[in-house]
Picture 1 (cartoon, rainbow, N blue to C red):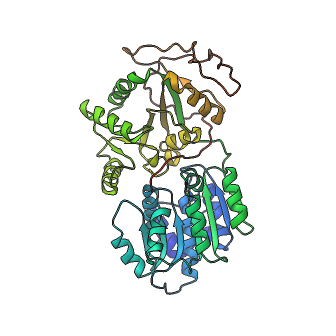
Picture 2 (picture 1 turned 30 degrees about the horizontal axis):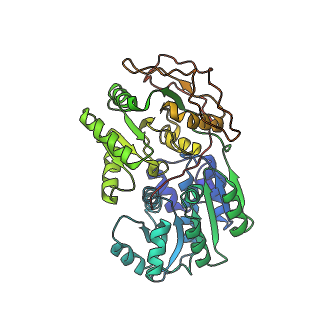
Length: 428
């Protein structure tokens, strides 16, 4: 199948040719035709499978098939995103695919001045990409009217629910026309997404191209058991051995991200941290440097787990294991993009073994254990920290893991990783 066989407008096909795209991914091949027909859609696909183009391309086509003059402060297509990074990424895709089309686009999100956003909205826009909080602020200021919305898109819907956007989403849905088209794209299908679909979508077409618990097959996953104080030394040593490779290090907290970045810089490693306390300008500057290769190491909290789309990321380091197992999948999904290979290494302290077990249960496999480098105290895996289950009985020791000596090794051609996905924390 080709994009041309899907019946997209010629200017869109020309733009795709410039980008080097000829064949649609599975989610695109299944979603584009039904969206072009005006149907409501629930699309379930893992990160990195081309979901953005799956809804952007047919919506551009529909806008061109129904050319009307956009009214001041009004919007024809509204795309909601959970994070600023993802919102920027979506608008960039819209501009690329619609480069040959006479359409107005805009992005509204927190962390930057409202004035330019109000000015764009005053002229009316065909496609608006927005984070929920900033959008509602602009609506309250009478700068944006949703009464003419033809299509509403919820992108990364499970993440938006995880980080508390459900009340905002319900407000937005109540403001758009009842006969609008609605598209809901997500990496997983928790019960909240299912309920939202049943309540607000009209006879939706459900498209699922991957099992609920899978990740990119070419990610080689491993875990290193170390004491918490040793993690900084291990991370620095690992990155020195992989110097020059694009790496993302994930931490659980903003303070932790800054601390890791400061230590790596002191060790002679170019690194920068991005998180919710950084200004939008700081975050965009760091991401731009990372994307063009000027910055080899990015330290991020989970705000970036679904907002970074950099094809050349070689390695993901989980400095801290996430509290929610599904977040692990989104983190490691930043590597092995577009069919490339990648490696993900998790640093697990004794206190985090329950989090590791949760990840392994989710992905239905044991993550391979690699030995810590010389100079790092060994962790006795036969004695697990005693933590009480709900039954009150202590956890049983885990005696099945066997370390190997392949510390920092480069990825094999293919792995057998399987996992599911959800995201738990982001800034608006």
